[in-house]
Amino acid sequence: MAGRRSLHEALPGGRSPHAWASFPIAFALLVIVVLISLGTGKYSVSPPDIVRVIWSRLSGLPSGLDATIDTVVWQVRLPRVIAGFLIGASLATAGAVYQGLFRNPLVSPDLLGVSAGASLGAVAAIFLGLSVAVIQAMAFAGGLAAVGLVYIVGSSIRQGDPVLLLVLAGVAIGALLGSSISLLKVLADPYNQLPAITFWLLGSLSSVTPADVASILPAIIIGLVPIILLRWRMNPMALDDEEARALGLATGHLRLILVAAATLMTAAAVSVCGIIGWIGLLVPHVARMMTGPEFSRLLPASLILGGGFLIGVDTLARSMAQIEIPLGILTAAIGAPFFLFMLARTRRGWQ
Image (cartoon, rainbow, N blue to C red; front, top):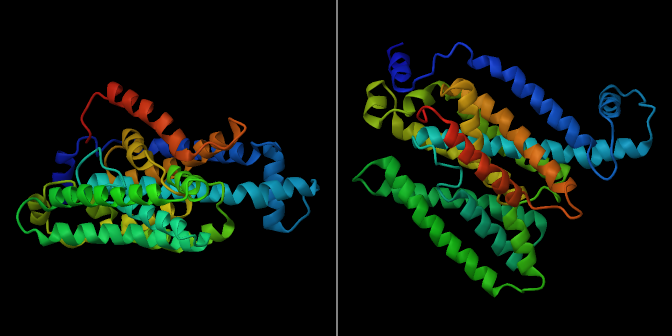
């Protein structure tokens, strides 16, 4: 109880009695976005028909609808919606964890080089002409390897604030990996390899398949489980390390576990869709405004809002123009102005 009282003193608003009231709204918005996404496209489907198709598949009863509707909803759009939810939820959850651990509202999942490492792995695979499965595997491995290297470098320096050292090591190694990506782009074939590299780096769900969803789901679950189990310990981790240790927390081990879990989720998401920015930075802010800083509420809110946000953005990406717009462009175009709007409207500090 002493730890919780100290936390609420450090994080104003943690006792808000109305914080849970926003969850029904978030769930309702998620359902609406999913229905819109499943029905939107060159072949439009009404919400009642969507419900009938899904119920028919789950119950085994005939839907009485045209087979084309079943194919469009169940085989084409639903896997993409599921992938969008998993990826958006993973990036938003990782962003909430990173912002809490590093006590910085400007932190996003690519802070420790996970996006740069995944990008280098994918770009190298494209440069070598490898298969899609290998591209995804190398992106996943590259993201994990980059964060592992950052953690080794940051931990090897004994003097200074460990949080600051990790951030600085991440910035330095991320810049080094970024220069390697630029070199490969210069060396790539400008007619075949370079367009593929550029498209991957901008992010898209257009090529995601049910097999891709199945391949990343275990990694996302493995990363999410320790975050859920340690959600109560995330609150004192927002304090200074000395105060957190005074409350009985092994800050070094907890930070390692939580960083590894968030990195695993981010690397899995990035490996199949490329780089999609702003979700891990923007969505935790919105969730924090809705629920307050208490992590047991912030975590599910970030998960729901992140998944719904990416589904909505992906729906715009494939429906607002004749060609599909890369997700990285839309998330930046939507996220940056909205983030500035939130900064202008905020009446209190980050906590």
